[in-house]
Length: 352
Image 1: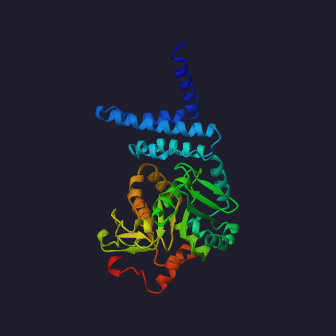
Image 2: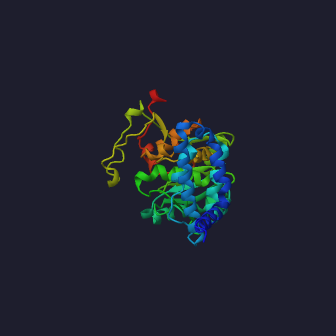
Image 3: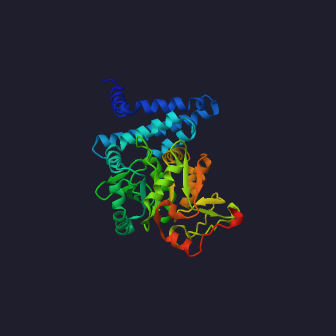
């Protein structure tokens, strides 16, 4: 018996499992070839490719054996490669195509659910608050029917592998591969962006908390028109502080036991869009944040405050901000709106 025969069979099986993804593998290799041409980098970059192929093979084998979502990470080994070429739109398109293929069924259901017109109305919630979120969802039913916006409930599910999302069209419930706790909000919001950017044309997105109520849909439509669709743009109520170091780095302490001993120690900002009041992203801004989700995940992991994370990434990507004098311009009401009406969160004139 040829001693290489069993090895050859194994290699053929591996090649067969990876064949549907060979174009992705080849393009990733080509995209970072200039890094491999530097001798000192060659070994580590090749190891990145080896890690990615090994994980992709595991996912492909699991799916071949009937597992829809094998519990194997894929973005963990893919992101280091993408981070080497963040300006290469071609390779980002390839990565999105891979994610879209692996999530074909939930992506098709999601696309059908947001096709009714208007921006996605992302009700950002968590598993324990699903009943409350469903009530918020129903409050926006008239908006969905009129094409003013398509409400979705967004929660995290850390049991999902990092490349997989699930969508239930009956409940309009989107489960993302992210921590569902308070400290997981940055990852949840930025994960939402790469999921929406898998759609042929990413929809605009109105982020709101699960305490939001419908206001004037015409205000939202006007604001969306003002943002346009030619370049990344966002609108939100500004929070100003004198310098990034004036940020309250204990804002989260007491809200979640898991991070009570972890003060915020990442980058702050002097001005950002209030997450409590909600904010609006146009289609190019959603795609821009989807790019950052693929090549700059380390920054997201360093954050604890979702609205600062989103605002800083948009700023880094050169997005235009439209600062609102009144959050009602978003077309919704919220607990933060009531606080603003009571005199809290006012923008100091000297900081405008």
